[in-house]
Length: 284
Image (tube, rainbow, N blue to C red):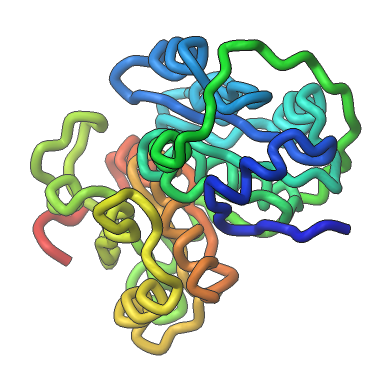
């Protein structure tokens, strides 16, 4: 089998393999304030052969008002969507966006949850592709029917797990939201400001350099090591506002060789929907 990419891939490497029969790219662009943005941007130009996949309708399940803003999709429905784009258990998948990986990492995590390791995020996203002088396309790729067999992993926890481990030493809870939202200030997306008691703030953008690419693995290992304080990566639970940007922190830890952390997918938007759950404000 050809080389497998499981965390990041550079634009030049992707350009050499993009048209291989066992490679599939997905455009994950999205805007939380404009749900048409991703589709419109994709229509204006995307990586040749890439399929568009939508955060709201394909990478998330319907909301109930108590399950967060981006509930996890039904695994079988997601697998069926990926199958129509040519994804099998042996396919190398590449996800990209134009927002520092914040949406591409969601697809990366979801595929790993489905049991698929051969998935990577384009480092630097669409901007890195364009800076390299590589072409965009407006053609819609045809369906590529395939077969994918699910093998779900224990990569997630629920609200009950988080609640039962508050203030216990066997869980390190890392919140990927911006520091002001973590403190309970400037909350524009959820009805309640603040954070889950005991959480540590690690803004997902802190994993990136000024040019939007991920920091070196050694740097990430040192920075996350200062948060873990000797805890095992398997004791780490990641969350954010709705289970999207937390995936960037999971990707960064995997890139750093700190494997096995899990996602609380409901995240703050689910947690704060129940007034019985405790809320903290201010710095950690």
